[in-house]
Length: 343
Image (cartoon, rainbow, N blue to C red; front, side, top):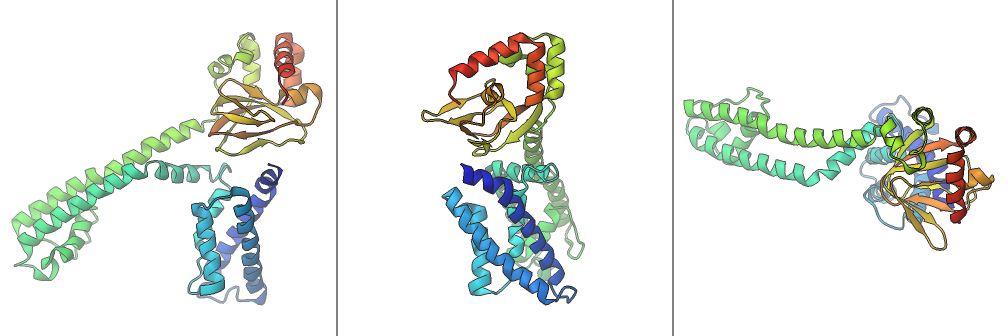
């Protein structure tokens, strides 16, 4: 766990920044001599060596071959053994992954996740598009092939007009000659608007759900429903609301590492975490952890990772101590739970 924590905290952002610099280098060095210097060539070579180190570290820590690791391997194999093209731009997705929780890139990563989650629905909608395209191209071929054989002489050639019609782009380079052909094209344009609105609606609804899950505004109702705070007066809950900080973490993320200094406690709003003890335990919504180190001024005595995507409410040490000094019930609750835990 310590290795993963060190990699996530220090090496992930370093390699992510190095990838971004490499992408910038590739853009400016393509077909131009703006940065055609030995310094930049050496930077390219050193970067590829460091990327080998990164890939080996990822294989060691992840113990599995992921999609992004496959892309990393393709880029490196091409550079050292093939050398046909510069594939570094494929690592753009790794850069997204490296800064996945950054507030600037978070919407982009949510969109990528949305596309992945709805991949079957999107594939189904595109199968419908292809089906309509084939039917339309066949019909327009029969109607127009004798009068306009250059454009509609075969179903395959008619598909270009079908694509521009379904997408309502209408370049104007090809137009039907017959009245029935024009009527069919007009109806297909209207149909195309509806067909392409379907995947947009699928993505929009799912994207909105993901954004709502990452809405870090914490309501008073949410806090009052947490067992730890349910006996506190409304004024205290309002004060807690101003001190809690929300964080959304993916599955497998290390939250606390054994041996670290205790600086905060965490409350689970949704999701679950695993406490790495000799007899591991799983905590879910409404549970909290990390209070023992604060109360006893100890370092963390157990590592804790997210089992699934989890939303945590973080309460810093100084804020917790202030609240406990004002509300004895809170201190008693935390002390009682802490004594029953070994982590």
